[in-house]
Length: 82
Image (tube, rainbow, N blue to C red):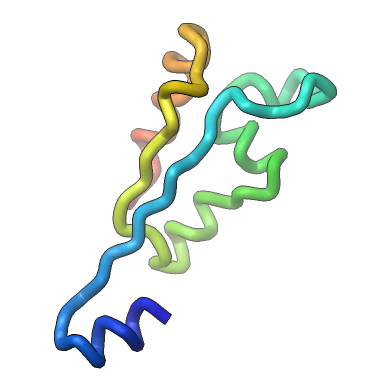
């Protein structure tokens, strides 16, 4: 839809996703809580697939939801090839 609107307006409209980190229910499996990326996959946010399909221009990890240990684990988002 953004491509259609952008084409009608004669410009490119980028996409930006705000990803919640460390905001999962208490019953999250231990392996899913090891990183922000694994947590997103547990919550059905398949960010690597979005990027692979060219759907992401900007990706922001919601740091206000991250605890101090989560900030270290969420560095894995930085390695995603956006």
